[in-house]
Length: 138
Image 1 (cartoon, helix red, strand yellow):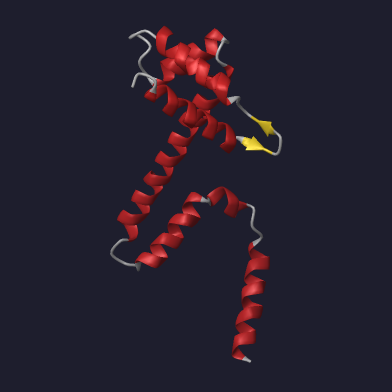
Image 2 (tube, rainbow, N blue to C red; image 1 turned 90 degrees about the vertical axis):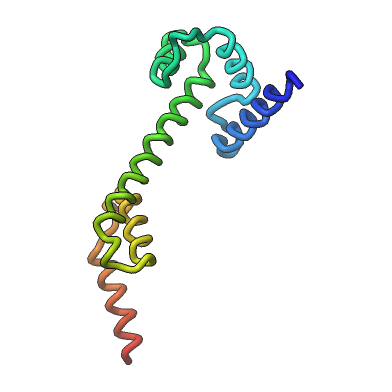
C-alpha cells in the first residue's frame, strides 16, 4: 500500500506531460518530474510551507526544472480561475435581478474572454449581422 501514492503521482505526471505536449515536444519529462517531486517531498522543511516559498526554493535550487515549470503553471491557473470567478461574482451580483440566466452566461463568457474580444473588428461583425438580418427580412 506504500506505493499507491507513488503510482498515483506517476500517473498524474504522465498525464501532465501529455497535456503539455505538442507534436513531438513536451514542456516537461514525466519521469523526471516524478523523481523530482519524490525528492522534494523528502527535502522540503516545515519552514517552506507556502506556495510562494516552495516556488522560490525550487527556483533557487536550479535542480528541479520540471517541477518549476509544473508549479508555475499550477499557480498561474489558480490566479486565472480565481479572477474568472471574481468576475462572474461581480457580474451576477450586478445583473442578477434584471436579466435571464442565458444572457448572464453569455456576458460571463465575454468578460472572461475579454482579451480575445479586444482583437475583434466590430465593424465587420456589425456589417455581417446587418447582412444576415436583411436576408431574413427579404
